Image (cartoon, rainbow, N blue to C red; front, side, top):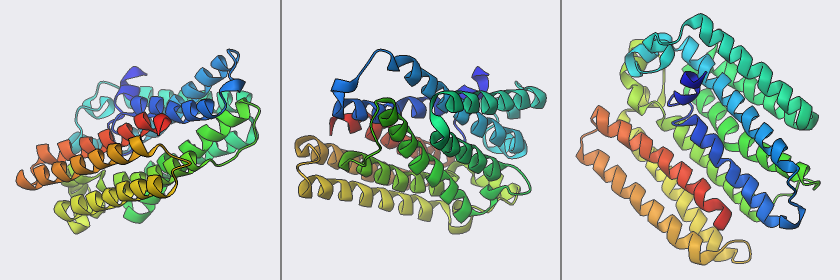
Length: 299
């Protein structure tokens, strides 16, 4: 079980467990906004929700590894299924366990609406990887699925469930609307850049991606440009909505992140897009993603 969870460096997620833990920043934001409603009795429900998210991530990652075994032997031979450390039969047992356990937890503690969102996430993760759908073959469908699950469903679902646990009706706050919009666009960038390190295997197995169609350099610049727009929009949001954001933090932090992105793109260009440089660039994009969640409760 731990092998699949720890191997979430895949087409969906550079570090699945860390990504899920960082979703707790949404919980932290909701608690900061309603600190008078915090109760120790909510702790068990919070951990149950986190485990359900881990199960959902494990299912999506696991099902992808099962059906991508040939491609992963070229692009990511260290993954447990591709490396032979985990048999196909064991992998199937694990993904079934993850799906069933996650659904039972969500249905028991979070009500029909969150359960339906959870089912939608599992469904999208399934058609992304599993034949005959295998939507990952189609660049537009693939990036829409990833943006929907990683960008909207997780952020909206976690915040909705947290407010419900506090006994509050759902209500968009400016900071939560910001992080959902920011991360949805970020997820689009991840969706178009996720295949940068995998061009060799994707071409071999005739998987059509933006990177194989448009070239690694063009996609790297496109991703960087979209992220820069994201950071510029964040700075303008802080300037024009001082009542919603802490400008003394939001503006300098996003300026630093934007400049670091420009520098990393320059490093990739100077390295002439070697496989190692591309992998480092993609990891850096995920680090920027994590950084946004880390600073979110404070801005």
